[in-house]
Image (cartoon, rainbow, N blue to C red; front, side):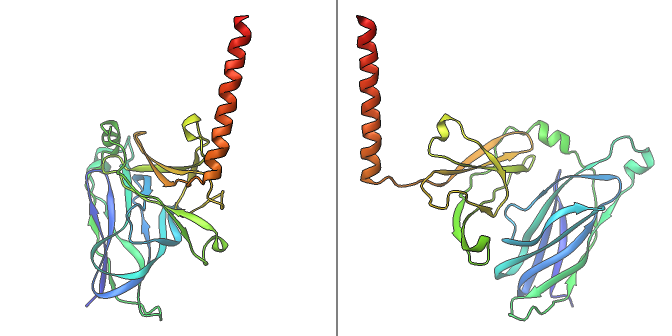
Amino acid sequence: MPNSKLFFKQDENSLKLFLDSPTEKVNAVAGEISLPTDFVLSQIQTGNSLINFWVEKPSLADGKIIFSGIIPGGYQGTNGLILNLTLSKIQGLSLKTQIQRESLKVSNAQVLLHDGLGTRVTVETPEIILEPFDTALAAAVDNIPPEEFIPLVAVDSSLFDGQKFLVFQTQDKQSGVSHYEVCESNFAWFGCDWQIAESPHLIINQNLDKQIEVKAVDLAGNERTATAFSPTWSPADYAFWSIIILVLILCLLAIKKFFRR
């Protein structure tokens, strides 16, 4: 009898891959997903995934999505989300092809026990029969931003040579998360050079003396911004900026007096 199961559930416009492991604690998952030829992959989402560290982040190549990742601390339970696919049906197909039901399953699946030995467990990978997708409609009616989230500053000796990095994720239940952007600036309200980023993201300013913000953007263009880090000003910082502001005020008064002559 299988110890774990990798299976899909289809929502209106998405296809989610879940892991069941009710009797054993596991800490690594891998597999391949071959897409039907008459479907187009719009997006792969890993927000809210059990996988915190991807050995091979899910990506499409030659009609297959290959993935593998690690679950620090292990996982035991049911309906643990691994990833979320947004698919759409290719337009212009014959009527016979359009009404034909396609199936999907995970192949070459591997699930490893959280036993320090990497012991494989038996994995069940049932097929799912796909229903019609309508992702264009979902994006068109989406005016709700991604859900609120809290980015974290972390340090791990096995990542980025022990340098500080950001970890962030959220979800968007309407059209799905398109991408994330990061800004490192103390003057973001004047405009910021937002950079597209993925989690984990190496922090450029390792001194952490600048504010760090993360923006999540969904497929409909809605945005949600969260502050990852806000520096604490010292008395010296307040004194410095107070002097700068005082000098600016004096300069403005001097200019005003000059033009009154």
